Length: 310
Image (tube, rainbow, N blue to C red; front, side, top):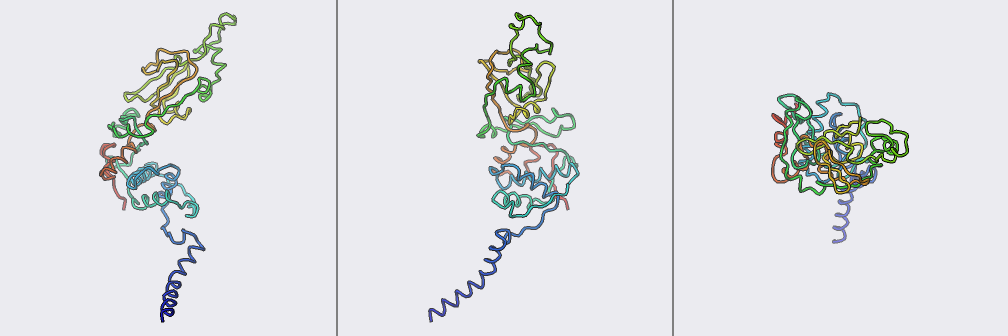
């Protein structure tokens, strides 16, 4: 009798599990993890978020970021047709969390005074975000906010070393050619004595202009000038809030006066990103401590409102 009962229960189990097992064998996890197809804007947001390492974010911070990217798409007013990849190519823990963040915030965006506006954001400030007016009067809604939490981040300060040759090469300049000319770009006299007096390019030849938070706004070398963001991009710095040091002299003043003759430079960089708008690290900390993620927008953007589009 017991054997009949066991066989009966085993038959029920096989009948119940067989369809599930076949779907899993034929289609993999995609077959049992059914998700509705995202609209073009949300799929664009998905692809943007999948290009970043967001593993450190809480689920609610992912929702906040999804709304920021969606608002950016609405602000631009374009949503290009993107071929939707199969789940088998994207499936994984990062995909699942990001997908859920996008799906759960579907149709949500942020307006400033009832309009879609550009909402700059970055990973990590230097302890205070930058005033939007530095970008122009039309960005006066981007507030300067204290973010003490950012100073506790593991990547708040990063240090690297570069030679002057490496820096000039990254800037598209020839080090040897620059050293044989004065900084104004004029050739030295042909005399060997005068050429012998010509010093190589040093840190003292650069001029740095900074804002009140320490971010470099512009860098000048002779007749060449770069914005702080362009300069840091060429040198692959995580932020434009950086200081260069050689032979014990650090360039900390706004004009960049007072140089040194060292060739190897130590660069100290604070923060990650341009420093405007939401600091995602601070947002994540505040959300984990209980602040509703929808309330973060108004902390960094004046008259911001998170809305749901019907």
